Length: 275
Image (cartoon, rainbow, N blue to C red; front, side, top):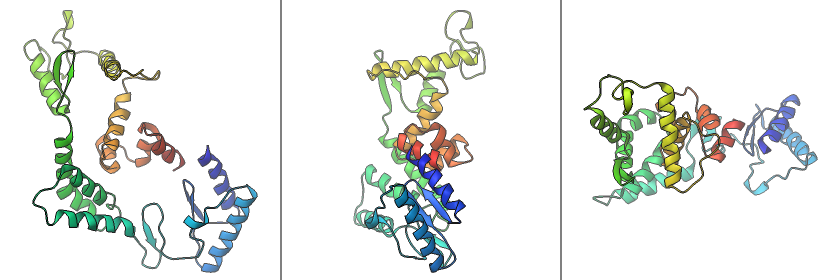
């Protein structure tokens, strides 16, 4: 609701000729001279005070500047470049100092460092290539070591990793499989033959309901087979995988597609709606 209200406020500021860029509760004013920025600031303050908004002065930058932090970056309008925040750089340097004297480090520290490095991909030259060829394999390997390899269901130990799960399934169905398709029936006349999409959807829903039952939780009313897309992507985000990697794996052209339609995290979803 707050973002919807702010969208109206920003639209009114645009009608008044104020060049403003909103992000959640933050507003970035842009102009080609300090005097014009001050004029925009006065107009914005008058409107916000009229609408009974409270400006958080200690956390605001109310002096015209050509370099200031905004949305996890520090844009520099003199050099026309953006830099990582000083705090982020200090965190990375501190993590590197922890790594240097040690012959081995924990997987948790490795994931922490790689997560910090991934957050700077869009701001550091050639960082995307470096991460893709050097860091990403280490990241996935570390995540693989942390993730549980199996779980117990119905008195049987089943693999939790997708690759192991597919290998387990293919081995379980190889004796009666008569079709090259991945998913085949396992009972009655359909045993070993290809199954229809609605049958696979029913299996997925059955699996969802079993997972909720094992967790002793009530499944949501709007649960359907396509929920796997949102669940898998949101779980990957919760485990620390970069949003860029998630979007590329899901073949989404824009990051806000995940944030607005598939992310189960309420805060990220609200951010996506506003963007």
